[in-house]
Length: 289
Image 1 (cartoon, rainbow, N blue to C red):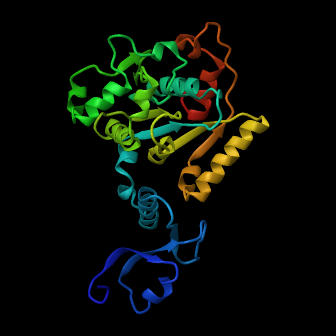
Image 2 (spheres, rainbow, N blue to C red):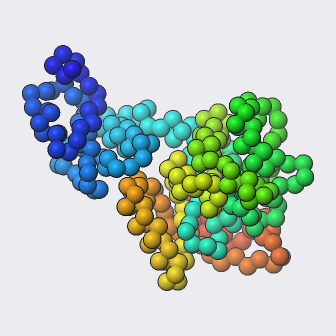
Image 3 (cartoon, one colour):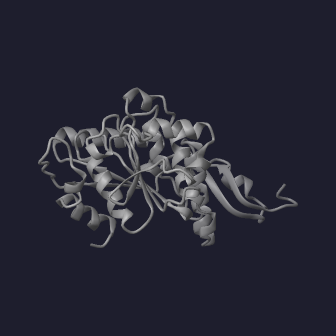
């Protein structure tokens, strides 16, 4: 093909890169499929081949965009909206409280949607009420291709200017939701729903919650300094490296959250918006006072 045509991108195995390029000048960009993580040649870009197809394609398009200086080839979701994940392998680290405060702060500046994937929600005001649709109901509509009705119906709940999808009422409902369905719903929110920011509070529910990290542009990971918590994070990082998901580790920002003293039995949304967590969140997110 290269004798008479031209390729913008050519993916080639590491052992074949030098051989296949002999005598051919009609390749816009050669990208080596490396069998070694972190492998890089001085004159060629490379991507790690043993990873998910979505991750591989994303790296290839990023390489192509950087070479051309062309932002139009980046992911459509990145142009239309930003998906921010909050995840931690450490329990009781303030993940859900931080997710709510982050989404609330962002909602002051843009149209923001919060989706909590925890089986049990600590913030009482986010719990589904009798008249509200929860995440399981929304996913049912998504499966029925009824998302168009979202534009005409107030299906998403609102609290202090923030739009959110109430968590599932029953934990087993979350376990019936497939990861690709959740990813599709999130992509719909930024591409068709008009949301500039979507904050995903990623818990352990669903069939494969870690795969949701791949759709996020940025991931915040609350951590704690005790040895057990640090060992959990180390185990998580080791797993991601071994499974070829370095691209996810690269977008994770570890954060140490301030302590939040709860006066009531459950975390009150109003009090959280005036707590040290709010000041901390504004600082790391770049949102003004």
